[in-house]
Length: 228
View 1 (cartoon, rainbow, N blue to C red):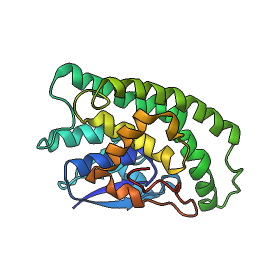
View 2: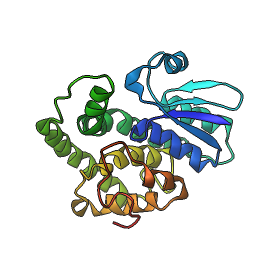
View 3: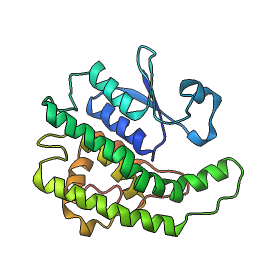
View 4: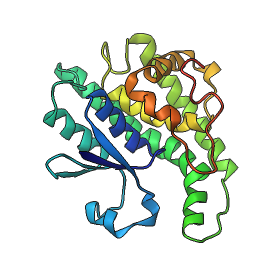
């Protein structure tokens, strides 16, 4: 059985989980509190980051983009990148947008302030300063710009990168879903993005996320609803 070392609210872990599920590949999941830097885990990935995939043949692949590209080449029966060259480039461009700009400006900030800061401090026996409301507020303001851009794309296309569901949608959904866990998206202002996300949440590959929870931090009331 292939193994995925992941953290439930890590957007990069979610990206790989969605990819594996879309390709209908069997895998077991091992939750990794990455901040603890366990020796057994850092032996797999010296950077200490999740996700890490151990494939059936024992191959170890780290970094979410490297993992999904590995899976695309190793298991090509269900393709998640477009065949056409420009569409494939657009899919990769949007993946990079969410994995860099959206992550650095929004999803990782909110995840850190609302969860990891507290959990890591508790795990390491330290005192947490608690979430910084100014940092969170600024991240939410920046997020509105990202969601406006997403709305513009979705209004012109069937999916984010074009006519077909691709890794761009998977990557975006992974990051959006983390922010949505905390209820920090005003969905009434972004109807196009909401409709796109409802389509994502209705896919079988997303089903496992609906029950994801982390200790002492419950999800927003609408989080598990397919039509919210």
